Image (cartoon, rainbow, N blue to C red):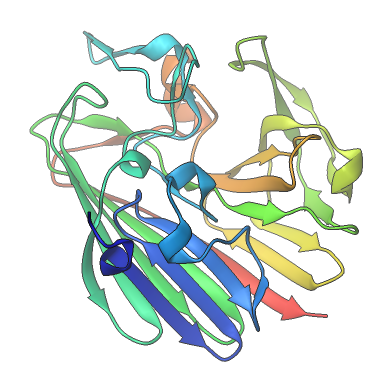
Length: 286
């Protein structure tokens, strides 16, 4: 049996501790401040699945790829089931694969995933995640490089899970919300002024746009500021779970099937070109 700790990386800075599991999708097992979870957190030796982690990467697309098929530059492609009984492929492929630890020290780590075309994604790429922990914040960045001979569609994002506490609250300015159909695919955009409410009062599972790049996330333990250079935000606040999600992403869910994918954030990455993104979570204990 493989020792999970052989794939674990821990960073420390001030009162913050970050644990990574490279073998479980390059995921964050946990982020703690003086032992209190900032994200939904599991000790790295106890983490069994990426979906149970504190956060995992969304590469080379965020959210759903409708009915596991798409057209790209005159070719038809299909992908395989990867998310239970969902009729769609979900969150790309990198979260399902083991990553390599490229480098690590007390406060920084680099993980890399190299993808060979397969039934999950038909193009070759490699992607690195750079993690940096300071006493005040977690900083994460992506560098996605197209190693295929063909231009490929690409998107990036992260899927952080936050523990739902008694006074969990969101303060996020937005201008639009994508309404989804019964199969959870977005159908149309409506105007929206944002999310300014206690999490307990919210029941959303939507992609939002017009995000200014900052989200305030407060509860009785912490005041958090989530920022990113990615222009869209997926927010998921399930009523029956003890967590909620605030996910910076580069494109509208299922943008690849929309009439103008580029207008909805999907990138065309030429062979050898690189696409980057970043996320910062500032932590203030109360």
